[in-house]
Length: 98
Image (cartoon, rainbow, N blue to C red):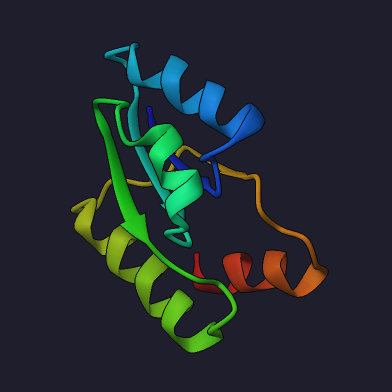
């Protein structure tokens, strides 16, 4: 299963990243803003693909999501989990990009 996690470096997201990284049935990708405090908490998790991204720049975030989707080589995201949508326009950007 190919999973994209947005946010995911603290609290529930960190726990989910850790659990999914241990299961060989999951290919886990996550995007976060690159805050050092948060990245230190997940930097030791193996078997996940980290990408820096900031959804506050609509055009760049859309390009990033499309780039990552294209890297899947025709495969599709089977789950997208968003731990960092604080406003409705954050969710809309993800829908638009996907």
